[in-house]
Length: 481
View 1 (cartoon, rainbow, N blue to C red):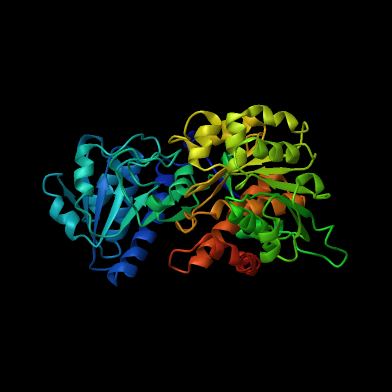
View 2: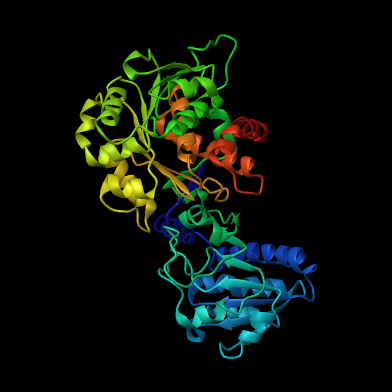
C-alpha cells in the first residue's frame, strides 16, 4: 500500500533528516526535481526547453526557495526565468542569489502580470505545507493572469495540505512535485494537484507509520478473490442481498447483480423483488423473506427497502445473523433515526456503513465538513464499524483508526443507483472473507474503475457501471506487477 503522511509528521521527519545533512543540500535536491519536471512540461506543452520562458511565483520561506533554486537550474537549460517576489524582504536568500547569478530576472508584483500572462510555464512556489487558508488577495490577483500550464512546488497554494479543502482563491496545478512523501492533499484533491510526482530526498527512514493509505493495483489484484481448483460455489462465499421493494425494485437488481459480477460463488436474494431479480439474474437463489434465505457469509442490507417498520425488521434480521453486514442507503437512514436497531447486531460482528454526504449528516448529526478524513474516522469509532464515505474521493475508515483513500477516476459514478452497485461489491468481498476495511477499499477501487470503463468518456448509468465490473476486474489483474 502507498503511505500518506500528514504535514506535522512530514515536518518532524524533515527536521530529523536536516540534523544530519549539509545545509542547503536537501533544498537543492528538491529544487533539482522541480527543475526536471519543469523542463519536461516545457517540452510537452511548448515543444522545446531552451528559449522558452518560465515565471516563478515566489513566496516566503523554503517553498519559495525551492522555486528559486529550480529557476537557477532551468537557466542552465537555456530557459528564460523571471521570479515574482510576493514578499521580497522574506525571500530565501541563497535561492534568490543563485537565481540572480544564473541570469534570472526578478520582477516586482506591479510589473509581473504581462510576464505571467505570456509565460510558457508558471511555477507555483507561493506557500508550502505550513500554510493554511486561501491565497491572499495580491497572490490571487496574480494567479488570475495565468494562461500557461502550472507546476506546483509541494502543493497548489491555497489548498489545505491536510484536508484538500479549498475555501477561497487557490492555484490549480497541472502537475505537482512533492518531496519525501505524499501528503493528504495529493489524494484528497487530485483535481487541484494534477499529476503528482514524488522526489526522493531521503526522508523514508524518518517517516514512521503512515497516517493514511492508498491501495495500488497490486494490492487490489492480490485481494480480489479468484476460484481455485478445490473451490465450489459455497467455498467462494455466499452473499445475501436484502434490498428493493415494490417502489424500488431496481435497487435489488443492481445490488444483486453487482454481487453476481463480483466474486460470489453464490448469491441469495431476500425481498419483495424476488421475481424481478430472478428475471434479471437466473443464477440467483431468490426468496421473499430474509428468514427463508438460507445460510450466507455476508449480507448486503438497505438499498430500496424503505425506512418504515418493514425496512427496520429486514435490517435487524440481517444484523442478527452473526455474519458481516454492509448497510447502505435506507439502512443508514434507519440507523440514524432508530439507532436501537443496532441492538440486534451480535457483538464483534463486522459492519460496513456506506453513506454519501447527506446520509452521513443524518447518521452523525453533522455533514463531513472540510476535514472528511477526521469526520469519517470519528464515525467509525462511534459506531464501531467500517465507514465508507462516498464522494468524488472515497474515504474508508476502520474503528482501529486506519484510513484508506480511494482517489477519484472522474465523476462518472455520480448517477442514481451507483451506490447500490458498490454495496453489492462490498458484500461479495465480505462474503469471500476479506478484512472489512480492505473489502470496502478494494470494492471502491473496482467500482471507480468500472465507472471509468463503463463511461468511456460519456455519462453512464448505474446499469452501465454494473456491466463493466468484469472488465474492471480484468484490468486490475492485467495491471498487476
